[in-house]
Length: 98
Image (cartoon, rainbow, N blue to C red; front, side, top):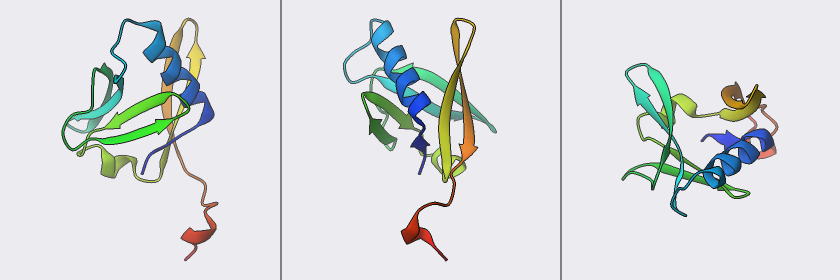
């Protein structure tokens, strides 16, 4: 399952509170063929995974979820815009050993 880096939590929280969006809104990650798409959605779509952390809400489309398994969403500023990226999660889960 996708996890959120602290930078992504802060960025998503900022996006959701900087616009006139409903309280249940979140950043939605979907698919467009082989590419991932990002956008603000007023609510999760049926079948979406909902990730909530530190005031940030991320909805992951059921088709995008397998592509994001073991990935971490990160964010950084590029000028006055926010850029999101993905990285692999470090295998630091003691229960996940093989």
